[in-house]
Length: 241
Image (cartoon, rainbow, N blue to C red; front, side, top):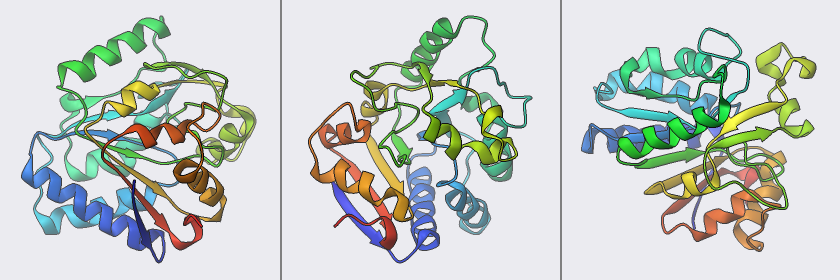
């Protein structure tokens, strides 16, 4: 893994935004895998800020987000689809027809997961996957467990993960859905290039274990050790020992 350290989350986000815009300029039809949650908010702010100045055209970019809450759809303010529209898509001009998203309101979640896998394959796969990491080492909603799902699947969220997402629900953890649909580990690892961002002291132990520890299903991010092109971008607080 290529480890890159930054003084703080803002510097990290500004640098990553520049890299992403340069990648789009080189490859206008870039297929992006995108995260949600708190960590990428400064990144999306940087992309909103830098896109007009750079003159980058997002109209041919395709996006696939990592996950969505079960029971929530695009019209629900708390959904990750609504989050992405607020934080990025509308501001930079992503073509709505090019947005790939899991439907948390799908009548058949298993069929929806299969559809999503097919949509990613039809797009030619993900060129650049942007990831965060949970304090327990989860990526997407692949939680620590005795076994991990390879493909997009329905996942039960651990209490810490629900607590980390409570801000989307007015700080009320009881309103956070107990399940989500998430890309699986093999789906993530099939991306051609991966950049993981981590900020804050609360992520330091997970980052250190991801880099130095054994590959284990109890720390799903450790499977990134198997990928040939991973960059880990951390601020000083989250930096591994």
